[in-house]
Image 1 (cartoon, helix red, strand yellow):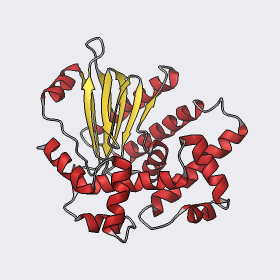
Image 2 (image 1 turned 45 degrees about the vertical axis):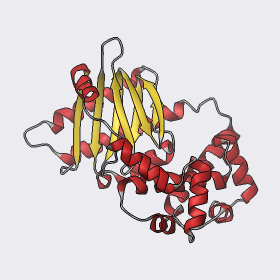
Image 3 (image 1 turned 180 degrees about the vertical axis):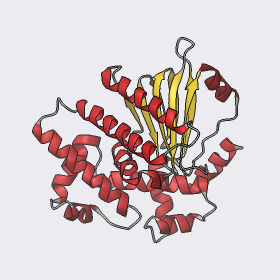
Length: 276
């Protein structure tokens, strides 16, 4: 992708073309936002597969290994696909990633707000297809689109009490710090100190929201990155382990196998066979 931004609309004919073509797990060097109006998405991302039905939002950040199969619903398909480079609106990209980490799909009600999302996509498309598109206009419209998505997501949390909302904000802050530091060999105490709280309370919040300890979430983030590197690079197992804060190859291999059921070498070989 050479240009900083691209938008196109996916209809039933285009969906059938994609279904007929080779579509293996891959990663790309741009961000991708899919707004599903009609149809379904069979989405393989973060090494898990789910099926989401429109209306939905799906966000894929740069470098994530994924595969998308667009499925018809009652012979219909209508989706907006927006692709853009990270530097186009970097602050919004990270905000979405921190919320969508290990959960890249958001189901939305077919209400007025969702209709506004599709209206913005139409306006963006009009500007993009103009003879001399103004990318600053597109950037502002795209930022507005993300703001509305975040607003709609928050509505789904309105039933939470004050304590749950405070915990949710703390958890988001933890994810942000984790994204900046997961390659370092830091433990629970490091993140708790950054959040000015005890390790015990941070663990309680993570258990409440994800039913996982802080350590498990850290290892999950490392594992996802390890899988991405195993698939997208030729780095050795030792190099990948060291890059993610593991000083010993054997320890990295043991952790990887414990969480994924395979050694790094076995996973890499399986993915090579799948792609070939």
